[in-house]
Every structure is written in structure tokens, then in C-alpha cells.
Length: 446
Ligand SMILES: Nc1ncnc2c1ncn2[C@@H]1O[C@H](COP(=O)(O)OP(=O)(O)O)[C@@H](O)[C@H]1O
Ligand SMILES: [Mg+2]
Image (cartoon, rainbow, N blue to C red; front, top):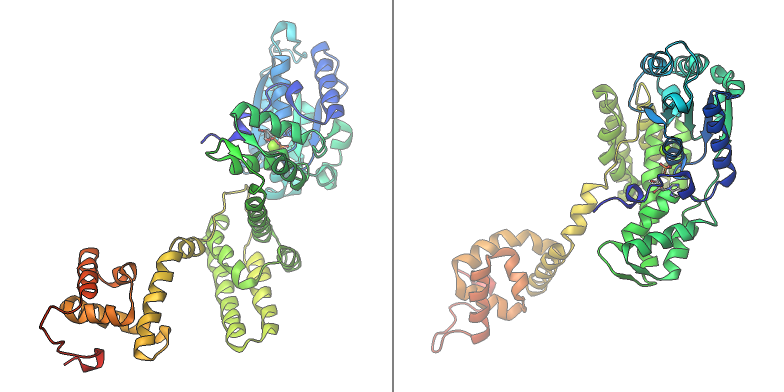
């Protein structure tokens, strides 16, 4: 199904919820450009994820009839590339060719959008990345929008000139308008969603519109009506999101303290979190040597987790944690750019998919165990020989079924379905008339 956050991405500034003041400032700045008198060549949009920064930049261009040149810092690896693309777009492609500002009458501007600029200087180093941005803005003849999560990270160090070169426009969390955004989407989709659910999603979102819309889409998936009970499934989703976010932070961390702190905040047992790290390490770490080092830490952590379990000595968890969070974090030689899509641990998924199959198998073993005076666990070891025995001798199999009360689906764990059905029928009808059982119990088997 189409992603609702994309389907309902605002295309005009008027459609963006909240942040009136920021949108007003953005409009004023664009009007200055159209008049040919911008007091700043660039603006910095800052704010937490999912509040409409990217949408606002593109909506602005659309409202003013400007073309967009988009540079995504997470796709490009170095300041050089940014500089090359940005400068050619910014300087060379002015319509007058003389370095004059191009007014909308003569052709309109090109809006250069440098999204996720934080990624640029985090990966290419503060100096290279920020220098490229400063140079580009100093030389541009076209309006530039920089988008970052944290304004102060951008303007510190080598970014200091940006304080005066750019106008800072702050985006805030979208709170009071969030419910009506969700409500409108429900109406467009023709889904009736209980008010408790909308309220719950809105309050959990902490101002993140994207997150809220994603939650809404999840609870609405394939339904016309969503009742108040959906609030519970959202609780689980929130827990999962917290783990995903935390694992990402750990894998991005550059020092042990940060990684350990994040791990503590996730507040889930380490023997559970290790599965998430195991699954997502190869997604994040691209250099084989980094990956190998990280897995060595994970393996060592696993040894401590095993000892903790066996000895029931939870003090050992500390060592496991230092190795699997701190160790894994510092195992990499560099930070990796971008935010690749993480996976839910496949081990947990398999376990949950096979839950009913495993339960049936356990029941079967328990019944056999009871009959043979042993634990269900021990009886599990007997399943393979029993399987051979029972496929070779239907009469024996039928007696065993009758004596132990094995059900058909349990029998189907070790025998194919037609045979299991046949044996069930035999067991129900009892031994054929006049025929003495050759054997009283399994132990008598010759
Ligand atoms: N203020 C908002 N009003 C309406 N929808 C929003 C708003 N902010 C975010 N969204 C929704 O979330 C999606 C992602 O928003 P985006 O502009 O990319 O956020 P940001 O760049 O701040 O992380 C949009 O496509 C839209 O569906
Ligand atoms: Mg964005």
C-alpha cells in the first residue's frame, strides 16, 4: 500500500500544519528574492524529524514557481561534490549569465535545497563539509535552503560564518494541529477511527507528524473501522520503535559511554537486544574489517550472556553489556552515513511464526513422556525413532495413540497427513475383531 506520509505530503505552504511563524518568515524571504533584494542568500530550517521541514522547502518552490535543485547530503560523500553541484547550480546557471539576480519575471529562481546537511559534516568532517556549505552560500546567486536537525551543531566550529550568512528559521514540534491532520487523512481514506486512538497517536507522537501518520496507517491497515482496542497494538509498536531508534543510536555512536547510556535507556534485557544487534550490524557497518571486529565483540558478549543464564548471576550482565554495546560501537573505524532500513530480528520472527507448530510438538512429546514416565524434553529425543516405528507398523502406532491420547494434529508432526488420518481411524475403531494385540505396550516391542 502507498505510504500515507508521501500520499499526504503537503505541496503548498498553506497545507503545512502548525509553525505559522516559520512559514511566514520563509514566505517573506522568498518574496525578497523575487523582488531582487534578499537580505540573506540562504535560510537554515532547523527542527526535529517529521515536523515538515523538507515539505516546506519544496512547497515554497512550488508556491513561488521556482525550480528545485536538490542535494541530499546523505547520498553524497564529500564536500567536494556538494561544492561542485551547488556552485554550478548556484553561479553558472543564472539566467542572465551576468551574475545578476534572476527575477521571477525573467524566469524564476532555482531553489537549492541541501537536505539533511548534518550528515555532510558528520561524515566528511566538520572542516570539509561546513567549508563547502559556507563557500557555496557566499558565492550563490540562487536561494539556498539548508535543513538540519540541530542548528547549533551546524553553526559551531567551521560553521560559524553561517550565523551571519543565513537566516535561521526554527521549526517546532507540531502539537495542537496534529489531531486535525490525522482526522483529515481518516476522512480522505474513508476509515472511521475511534477518537481514543487518534488522541493516543497524537499524544505519543511528541510533535512528529510523520511518525503519527505512520502509526495511523498501521492501525488502519485494511480496515474501514478502528475501535478503541487498537490503542494496545500501538503500545507494542511504540516499544518496537524505541528499540529500533536505540539500536540505530548505538550503531552510530562513536564512544562506549554514549552506546552504554543509550542501551540503558532502551530498558530491555541484553539477551533480547543482542538479537537486534546481530540482525542489524551488517546493515549499518559496511567495511568488512569493522563488521568482523564488531561480531567478535558480539560473540564475546554472548559468552557472558550464557554464563549469566547458567549461573543465574546477573552481575555478569555488565560485562556482556560493555562488550555488546560499547564494544560494538567502537569496533568501527568511521561513522557510516545515511539511515538504512533496519530489520526485525529474523530469529524472533521465525520463533513467533512457528509458535503453534512448536506448541503442538511439545504437546506430543509431553503425552509420550507421560506414557513412558519421562519428561517431555527427554521424550523429544524419542520422536525420530518413534517416527520410524510408527510409519513401519500402523497397528502399533494406533495402540500408542489410543493409550496416550495423541491428537491428529500432534501425530501429523511426525507422520504425513494421510498416514496420520489412517492411524487415527484405526485407533478409534480399536484392534481388528478377533485379533489379539501382539504387544501390550511400547516396551514389549520385539
Ligand atoms: N507540518 C506538517 N503538516 C502536514 N504534514 C506533515 C507536517 N510535517 C510532516 N508532515 C508529514 O510527514 C511527512 C514528512 O515530513 P517532512 O517534511 O519530510 O519532515 P522533516 O523534513 O521535518 O523531517 C510529510 O510527507 C507529511 O506527510
Ligand atoms: Mg526532511
